[in-house]
Image (cartoon, rainbow, N blue to C red):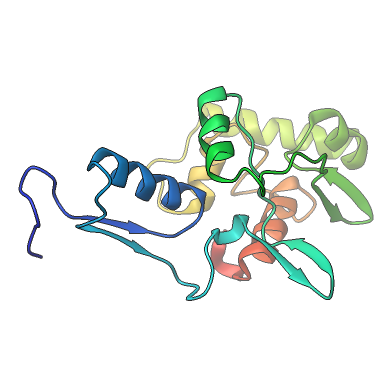
Length: 181
């Protein structure tokens, strides 16, 4: 690839979701307003926003993914408010996963999960988590391995009744790919 300026190498940004749009805008700003040498790729030919976008259908608005803007950093909030003054809405929303007849708050809240799972299943999840902390998966070769290493309720060896399958169900539904976990 031929570079336009050796001091400012060409940049390829994959995805026009919030992170990709921010990266592209900041690259343009750092180059003094020039977008030369910056390429932003997006799978959807007619829209940006990734799975954070909202679409309208028959008069209703739907969020494509379970994502919404949230930051405790006032500089980041200001950055987006400057760019979306009319579209930056502040609304109360609740994300939940419906699984086996119960609503689970997302992100998971310990007391909500404990109440919905019951004592025994929650104990098994806690033991699974403690096991993974004492005997980590090395090397991490899959998303399930990576997630099991983090402070989550995910365990690669979990039973069908565990929150692993709750999270697995959620990600498979969002990404429409059974092999995600």
